[in-house]
Image 1 (cartoon, rainbow, N blue to C red):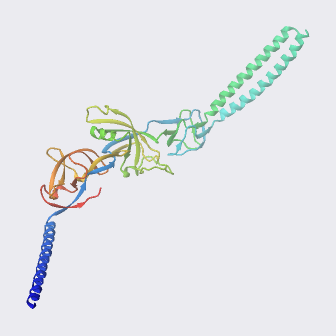
Image 2 (image 1 turned 90 degrees about the vertical axis):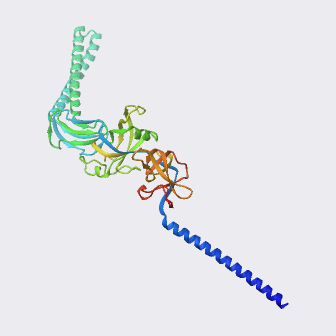
Length: 395
């Protein structure tokens, strides 16, 4: 019995030893595997990787030369000579149609108007007297108290008095018309570009007092490459022009409203729409000359030439896209390509066809599918076929 007991104990001991050895072996093997993987990973270059996906972004045309001008500029002259009593506006001010800009005085016109009024009163008195005579003579001639000839003479005198009164009233109206020219008003909504004369100055007829122009609605002209223009048109017909901020600080004219209107745009951005295109947008050409209507409600933009302008679509478009940094261009062929990863985490070069660019994104027309990984790094730090580690790149 003792021998069997000891045998059983020995067997159990052996089993325990075997289990311990096997367990230890498994642990050592797993630790070795992890160590090897860690050592191998330490030898790999870790690169940022993004996954192809659908994104909303704008279309851009960068480095565009842009000329801005006012649609019209006019001088407002004095219509009659006189003294400027009051100049009610100042340079850079916005005025609306019919708003009084200045008032003038001409003593000769005032005197002539007063004289005409006095002449009218005298003529009116003569007319009233002649009218009364006619009414009295009418009764008398009906009762044969006077001759018909005397009555007709009274009627003629009354008509002459009326004509004289009307003539003097016409002269007075002419004087009032001339006097109305002493009030200078804005012919339309505009900005005051220049004030030529100050209050108290004597001005002659035809001498300019103000220069006006509408700087809230400007015209722009630019030359846009055909491919970029097609990309812009594919997103919509409203656009945003963005000018380098430093170009808006040193201004020739002190425009800019004291209280700026509310807008979602930055101060260096302006809404635009297309006025005309030459040649037609679908024409087979390299460039288009585009005329724009530029909205300038802040008055900050001024008529001049701007370089390095960005034109951006107002609306966004949803496309399959990758970060711009993932896309490279072959210097020899001009084809675009990216680096993606194989199942063994090795770099594979893939040629692609690109579409719209904007907001740091490039549209993928062909060559990649949604969810595929692409490397977002300078290709000079890696080569095709090398095994790499990956870290997620958010975009």
